Length: 107
Length: 127
Image 1 (cartoon, rainbow over the protein chains, first blue to last red):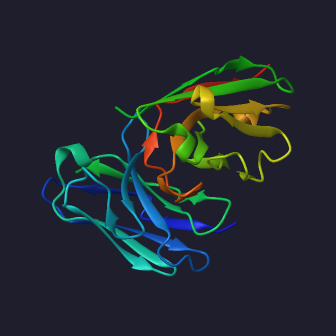
Image 2: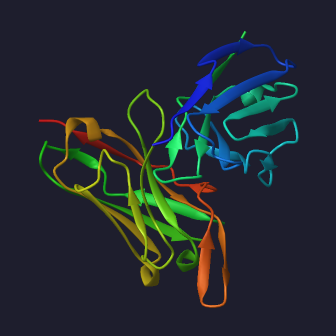
């Protein structure tokens, strides 16, 4: 199975900060990567697909990039509602796999 | 409104069985692949199983293959997960999720990310 390694596992940031989360795949997955946001006690929400495709309804302060094995999710200006845990997921190959998550906390 | 509602979770003893259901509404259920994803308490997400639009293809995580069976009834707009030989490590919150896709002619094609999620149901395996 393809392993996804997210870094950092957690971070503290302030409202207005630029935040970058990375996801590294154990083998090349082209652009078959999605990002999800999960708030405490809630189901995950799709943010990005195909590495850089913004899901409908998601604010434009979220952006994604990368291909092959290295990917990033960037929040250009962190808002109070963005404090959550973020997961990457590869869909290049079965079994689908998720990264371990990055918890974004308030500084 | 697109909606997925899971049911069937609960407390079960190790070695016993449980069947989860997911009722879909607000979209053409039969056109889309569907998946189950679980999340142990305080931990990350783990994909469990997926099924194509017409049940012609299924996939399982190694951790559940041979014990869990995914199925669907397009007429009832429902997805199922039959869980047998349950283990304590199967304890988790189980989510039903829809994959986006499109249909052309008599076939449908799925992407393998998950654009709609249910609220989940809790499964606890303990004696």
